[in-house]
Length: 287
Image 1: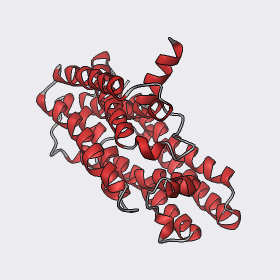
Image 2: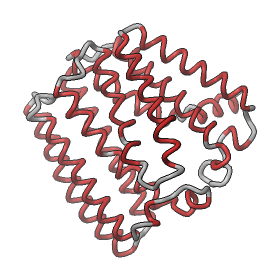
Image 3: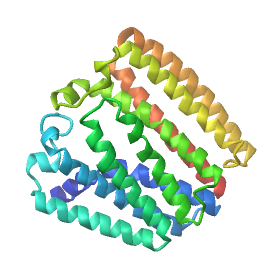
């Protein structure tokens, strides 16, 4: 029973779907202006839509997953699930997610499905064809906060959600490039084109540094566009951005000199932690 639950968790990539749900909850809360249990239903809807999209992705890439050690232990390559069983679980994810989003409005359903369709019909096929699929793929990271925003009754043409979505969009590139640097040999073994086919590691380190700093600076745009009203929260975010920029510069210099995997891992963890930190501060401001 426990193993079956673990397989379901892995099929839905719950460890990724949960942060995705938090971004949706952040979007919901920022428009509603209150931290509420109702917003959790919208976030849960996006969670299950993300889990469904992740499951479909594993169906699409099961042959490639068998070739990479980081993915070969997933339920489908291991044969823990039959193809039919995986399809049933995915349909349950999507049915539950769609139902939860239907409790709000049609726009919430639209953006929930838009995220899935973009991920599975645009990004996933492109990933097998071009090393630059991360750019259109990054839009997937910008959609969940939009879904939460519209679920709360927000307008898609409101400039505030554009700034918030832009912040999440920019961060997808450093997130993906750090994974590519770490697992490039596995990606190449599975037949995926990788950006290191065109750029040296040192070039990619520098590009990743510039993009990371751009992402951090974009967090400051949340202040003038009135997403953040509290001076205290604004100050905390500004100081956090400054400290992160210094750390990115120092760590990039260190990894540029040695290309140590431990430094890359710290970059990955800390960069993603910064996103969680910003979302926490945004939620705290609404309390």
